[in-house]
Length: 416
Image (cartoon, rainbow, N blue to C red; front, side, top):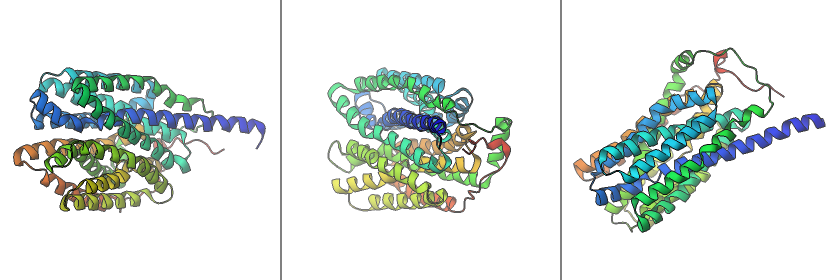
C-alpha cells in the first residue's frame, strides 16, 4: 500500500474510533439515567403520596413516547445529522428530569418523566447513535462496533444506579434528579462527533433518494422485518418490567435493603460483556438465530428465578444472567436491519422497528404497576414475560435475512 493510501485510510480508523467512543458516552448517560427510574417508585409513593400505578404510568409513558418519537428522531438524524438531534434531545431530557424533581402532582410528573424524558431519550439513544456507527463501520465489523457502543450504555447503568441510590438516600429525590439533569446537559455537544463520518473521505455510491414513505412501505412488506419488529416487542416488555419493578418486587420478598439497586447495577455490569459478546456472535453467525436463542435463554432464566426460592445469591445469579442478554438484542436487531436493507435509511427503519420495542416497554412498566395495585402481586407479569420470550424465539428463527437489492435501500461505501 502506498504512503498516500496509508494516509487516506488512517483517518478512517481514527474517525471510527471517535464515533464509537462518542456513541458509547451518549448511550452511557441516556441509558444509564433511565435505568435508575425504578429506584424512585418507592420514594415518590412514600414521600409525595403518589400511587404506584401513577408513577409506573409516568415511567411507562416515557417508553411509549420514546417509541413513537424514535422514527422521527432517526429520520431527522439521517437527513440533518446527529449533532442537532442529540443536542435537542439532551436538553429536553434534562428539562424533564428537572420538572420531575420539583413535581408536586402526578400530572407534572407525567409531563416531566413521561413526555419530556421520552422525547429526549429518542434523540440520544439507539435510533440515533447506532445508525451513525453502522454507517462508518465496515460491513464485516458493523455488528461488533454496534455491540461495543451498546456496551457503553450498560456502563452508564453500572455507574448511575449506585450514584443515584447514594444521592437519593443522603439528599433526597430532587437533588438526585437535578444531578442527573446536569449530566445529560454535558453530553449535548457529543452529537457533533457522530457526524465526523462526512470527513472520512471514503467514496459513496449514491442511488437517487427515494421518498421515506416508499422506503417504509417496502420494508413493511418484508416478512422478516415484520417478524423482527414483533419479536422486538417482547424485548421491551421484559426489560421494562424488570428494570421498573424488580427493586420493589425484591422488597416484597423481604430481601435486604439496597439489593434492588445492586441487582440493577449488576445487570448493567454483565451487559457490558453481553452486548460485546452478542455483537461478536452476530458477526459470525446468522443474527436471527442468535436472537432466537437469546430469547430462549432469557425466558428460562426468568422462569427459574420466579419459581425458585429467593435469596441474595439467587438475585445475584439472576441479575448476572439477565445482564448477559439485556441489551444484546439491540446490536443484533439493528445489525440485521442493516444487513437486509443497508445503512442509508437505517435510522428510520430501525426507529420504526424500535417503536414495537417501546410499545412493549410501555406495557411492561405500566401493567406491572396496574397488576400490583389490583392483585398485590407481580406473579402474573413474571409469567407473562416467560411466555412472551418463548413466542419471540419462535418468531425469529424463520426470518429471511437475504439482502434486499432495491436501489432505494442501498448506499454503501465503495470497495477500496
